Image 1 (tube, rainbow, N blue to C red):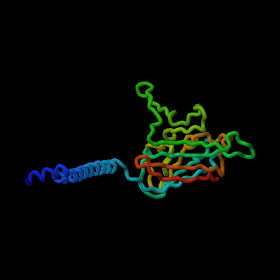
Image 2: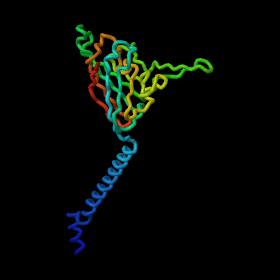
Image 3: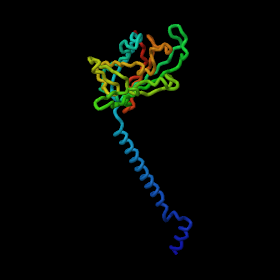
Image 4: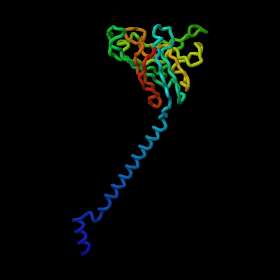
Amino acid sequence: MYREIRTKISGYHPSLDDGGVSPVVGVMLMLVVTIIVAAVVSGFAAGLGDTAQKAPSAAYQFDIDASGFSTKYTGYPVELRVLAGDMIPSGDLQIITEYTVPEKFRGNDLADGGKVIRHIMDGSIIPFETISLGVNSRITDNSKARVDKTIEGYPFVTQTTGYTDSLFPPSSGFQNSQYFGLCNFETNCVYKFGEPDQFFGFDIYDPQYGFGEGSTVHITVIHKPSHSVIYDKDVVAKW
């Protein structure tokens, strides 16, 4: 009699036999999924920590000397002073310059007034190749470092080039010249860029671009391994 009654009740209420099983299984599945997701996120974060490089600390100051604009062979118009911070290989850096052509220059209207010239100098790009000329003779072709003036839209097309021809650290003569991309930027040192057209990305001596005393260039220095910005300011050319 009891069995018959229980069978009838079970037929109407099957949850009386196995109703507690489904919630337990659901909770277990949720726990397993949560643990797997946590493990994946933890592993990804650990991987980022292993590969990302710490951003260096450095204080830079750029100066543009307009007194050197009278001739291509007078002085070194661009100087970088490393005021403080870490020693940074220049091969890890990008120097980005942006210059807007003025509407007028020396009383004359400029055809390209208002246009922006943007140039990227990347220390990781090898700008020259060594070429053999006989058994004991070797020369270097640094044409890759130069701004390509034949490119369509020059100089209003952003170009990325290698380091400039010459970079003179303090107390070094011509025979000790270095290259951006090969030297290290050290504290309390001044670096002079010997090729301003390669630094700015256009011929600063050409009056059609209106570059001279009072011109403003926005200079940004990026540390590529850490994707951090070291310098980001407007620099005014001064006499």
